[in-house]
Amino acid sequence: MKKDFKTGLIVLFVLILIICGVTVTSFYMPNNINITSSSIYKVDYTKNYKGQYVGLVYLTGTIEEKNNEYNQDWILNTISKLKDDKKNVGMVLYIDSPGGSVYQADQVYFALKEYKASGKALEVYMGPLAASGGYYIACAADEIWANRNTLTGSIGVIAGQSFDMTEFLKNLGIKSETIHAGKNKNMMNYNEEFTDEQRQIMQSIADECYEQFCKIIAEERGLTIEKVHELADGRIYSANQAFSNGLIDNIGTLDKAVDNLTTKLEKPGIKVTNYSYESKESFISTLMGIINSSNTKAKGILPEEILQDIENSDLYPAYLYK
Image (cartoon, rainbow, N blue to C red; front, side, top):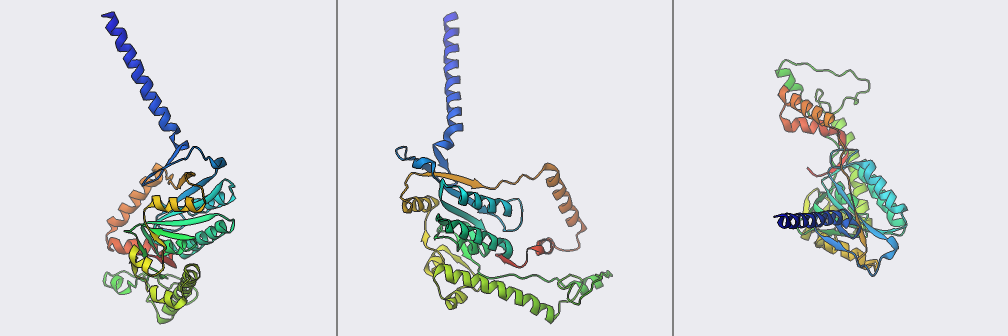
């Protein structure tokens, strides 16, 4: 009986060691392999490249100052740190975004241009959606890769949305007035008619941003401005259509895009380090957001879609796919 008890203890002890061993291995695994959303990249232990690595940076969500998926400071700081790190030799930027603010998209584009100017290789890989401002940013890359099911394009600008609710409010017996100085200071507010002059003002901003977008595509993709204008009518393109029109360079998996970069660098098996933003929103702020959202919907005068458009109006002008 005692012998069986001792044997059982030994077996239990061995099992604990095995479990601990696996756990310890899992903690240290990132030093040996790098896991992405689609694959495992193995390190060639005969070539350690003296600690050199490629950065796989994830850019996801609507491009603006900050939201649950995206943070402008984070993406700019990450690009800057990789640029300044002598051990970093290249970057694959994974984009899954409908685009966003013209200002923020342009900032990221120039940050990537500075990264390349430091002598480092840059590829972009497009996930499910890399449209409008997402494509604008992608143009900074040496090569653009897309998944075969990627949607891209949507080359154009939204300079604003006007909701003229004066008649609607009048029918409800509601009078809303904004005290302002300057005849166009209150333009595009829901309680004032949108005039032809105001429409021309916003159209001129849209046209200027549009030409900036088209010029960048022409320069970076080696296309004539006439060809870009033809493509840039706001439509989205499949990966095959984008490839046929010269908007991207390759169609394949993320694995192949990373392998392509490491091959060009003549560093097969080099370490690939992932960088992705994680929102650190507090429980209280999340709870208050839910409460505020519920209260807004409870007021119930306007459809939810219109309320969302009004709330997002601070994005404009925007390279944004809707």
